[in-house]
Image (tube, rainbow, N blue to C red; front, side, top):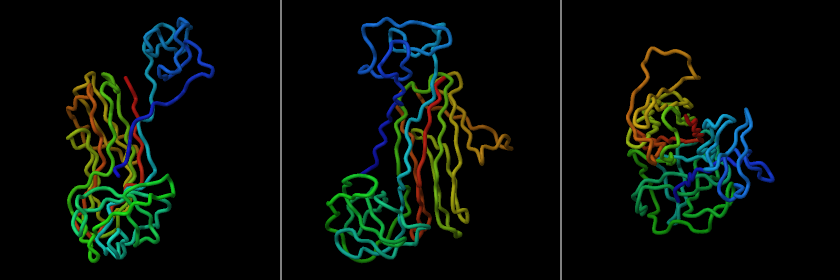
Length: 284
């Protein structure tokens, strides 16, 4: 049920493969019998598979680590209309999601654990839960949850992890950076709806919305000549100046770390939509 965010390296290879011209390549398409040839100003793979320029210096290529436009929704309290996951009476979303999306459902009412389910929406206030998905974007699986108690669904006000992305150890290098662009939606009222980003156990972004109904603040985390020390900043419209300082953190990026996107409701009748995100690695 949880979303899969296995990073996929960009496939920017020459076809047919030529030694010295593959940009980011796996062993399956790297020529083995042709010695690499260095030419000034051209990026190429050396004999060990490292991308270098014509002078043999390592070349850093930015790439997309993970991205998605699949909505992941913390749904509000409502009603289980039956025992197999039909839900009605939800607080109205700003739109009716199309195809298959994911929803976070809190435990109770026959739901054994708080977790993500696949769902299709028939309106902005009603959906059907599924435990599997046949294919995206539009075909749910055939397995519905069982044992649910028909009646009121209370929702929840605990923090919910919606998406995890693995940052591979060493991906940033000593001076590289991570650029994160999430998009969130929530209702307009006086209640707190918190949208959060964590790297490992370190809080990177924690914004509490009330009357703001959308949030899309890019964040940059930059190693500062060490894989153990970073500065991060969150921009409003990529602002060029701010009265606040950059925030120092200490995360060991030489090993795999989880980047997680989370939401927290103060009142269970509200919702949070994680509309999508992109995570870019700029090695350095």
